[in-house]
Length: 320
Image: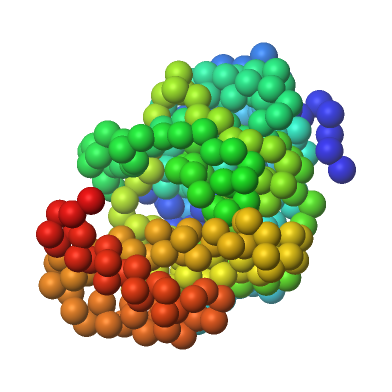
């Protein structure tokens, strides 16, 4: 049940983040707010050393910090690999705030007014279910890799969110605490944050806030996404979009506009993977990716392959 005294729940999923967790926590403790918020640090049962090294953090009037230990029974394996889904779900199910913000334990925030700006916006704009800022890439030692994760940021409508379109960055987002459960096919879907944005689309629009300082997304070999190879990434994308299409059919019917447009969304989601492997002469990965595409049953394979060849031709010959 929502505790009205908690305005924002900050969720920190962490696993093997001992080297970076203090940077993440400090960026949250330094938030300047006129409201009370809670900080929930989700820890795996076999990774307690990640939090044991943290200095004692005194509770203050403006926030409360809690540790949530995810048990071995809650472990979720996706496509044969251990995932952090159990820990992630445990955090979301434990939130008491009106709004939720997420920051993985290896990432951090740069704007001390992040929570205040986002909560103020959502309080004043009821048609929006989420708001977010930009994101920069940093390496293991906080050196800047890229100033912006995307070339541009837009404000996705609810329709776009429903179809998993829009450049939302998880560690910069704040969203309303309106998700009461996940459809069954989402339990084993790799991209849990994408599923959250899809479900938020049933409740409103997203808004990019240009005055937010960019959050920092860390690139390292142990990262859940950055440490995954290209073929696995595309497989994850395929599986996630297939689950979203299934849920859209459930809600709107097979011939709805959302469902009809999902083939295009799917193609846009995988064409970059296919082209870049060809560009880099990674032919083994390319053919493995094609196998992933051909094994899925949710999208029109013939149309996808035709569009892929057209896209490849345009890119190679720089045609519009």
